[in-house]
Length: 183
Image 1 (cartoon, rainbow, N blue to C red):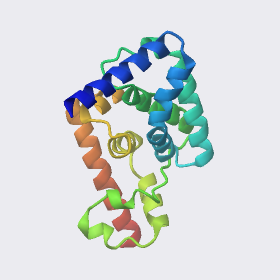
Image 2 (image 1 turned 45 degrees about the vertical axis):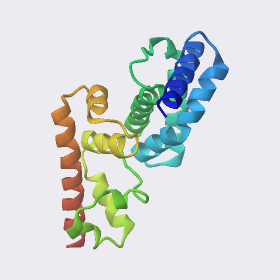
Image 3 (image 1 turned 120 degrees about the vertical axis):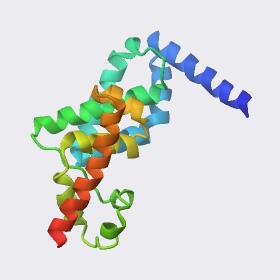
């Protein structure tokens, strides 16, 4: 099994080096392998299909233009998730609001006294709009981007403990907002 992991890493590293040298096909392979999660990050942060498409396009252009700055300390996909999150936030700032489509996110929030009572997705969507943007971003990157606390900390420019706190507060803010609207 370790040999297969090593071969995968070697293939990944070769594709990265080729992409850094300007090989668009190698870049395309790397992006294709990360496409679904990149789309998910963009959609969850922007909350709108059109905005997510714009953010994903901006992210891919930025990744291609900046592939030379990729140091290889993390996986290419992790580097791209950060770019996608930044592009999504930029799109949201252009329209002055950040809303997350929670149709697929309700099951992530496992506060037992709240999730069992949630029947109306509109209530959850409105409640999530009440969650602070930095907290919401940390939660989306953790749950959908599958980034570690350390990676989110690097992305947000805050200590790891702050990331943990933001994710915890995001869950509490969501639960409180749902309680307030259904109570």
